[in-house]
Length: 221
Length: 276
Image (cartoon, rainbow over all chains, first blue to last red; front, side, top):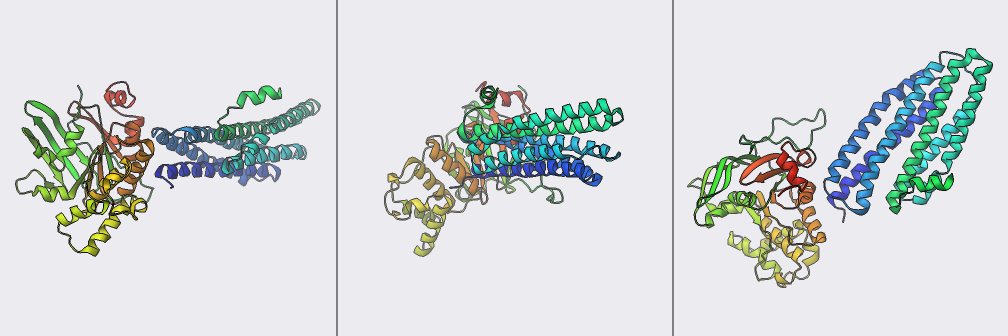
């Protein structure tokens, strides 16, 4: 029997998944705008962020209404997790906007270097996001767990890129502003991977009722 | 004590999508104006002015003795059966003053059905529990009776469970099934309004969930007013909620507002379990 309450939970999930597809599209478009030096696409990323923000508010409102109905056990976890995931997705949207803004700035000057590392980081962060969300949809906590260690790799890539760009600035002071933009973009991608990790941890909590947030990090360190 | 004595206009439960706004809000189906009720010297309801919308679920909440069941019973004049009750003010249902001398109370109760806290099936078969009321209201043809019995049991989400034993005693059903049978009996005569006085308070959580889901199905066809002591139940099933205290209507609003951001401190204290 599909109860009225279950239908409302489904609506909450649907809203969250729409938000997720907008957030992942924002990351993809922001990076494509950077690589292709496409200012129009970058501006679109900034505009589309309003839609992601609207979904965050909607998901929170729905969740609050559902919490007033005193859900229990997995329903309770789903609602609280939905609020956290929507917050992470909203931040992913904001980081994508930052990348888009910086890519417009970079478009004013000749390209400093091929964006190999940035593209690699972006691909990894996107994979992490997609896997975390697929784990949420398909009820696969193991898939979510597999996302978490990847965060270290993105962190390492970011550190490497930051070092490389710092050296570049010392050698070629005329490139400082471009290097700073790229450093910000790299940091934004690293943050997107952090949000993907949060989402993965939230999915594990949802399906296993186990809070692995700090345990996972302690075990890794 | 601060109370609200103006008719309380309840906002629509959900804002319509842009470009899809309806016309002016429909007339409320039930409207009370300065309604007061005394049991002898004791005043049970004080100056209640409220509006209840058609095909929505309205929940009455408040501590015991606040007047919510008394008000519910005003809507089909069940209080007439109690000695020494005096009512002033007005109750209009679809524009008609139901306390007017011309009103046929039997007709009124046909339009305004009621389900009580304790299920009260007649000591007859499942089939007869529904057919009896229909015959009383003039439906005689067997095939017509059978159709209505089936339709009512389906609407009350009981058909699948009892279709093979319609002629066994209604008292053999579980508590939850008996309550759904009483709902089927109430809707068999096609009332406009269903009054429910704590219909799930004697049931276990599963039977309660079934009744709650049934109420949400029934509101497509009926206007439902329910008294409940269970705050979460009111939050789960109602569109509008009215909070009563010591015979006063303290606050009435969209349920989502009452349970997340009530405007009166007394309402907040009651729904958060701090008093009452």
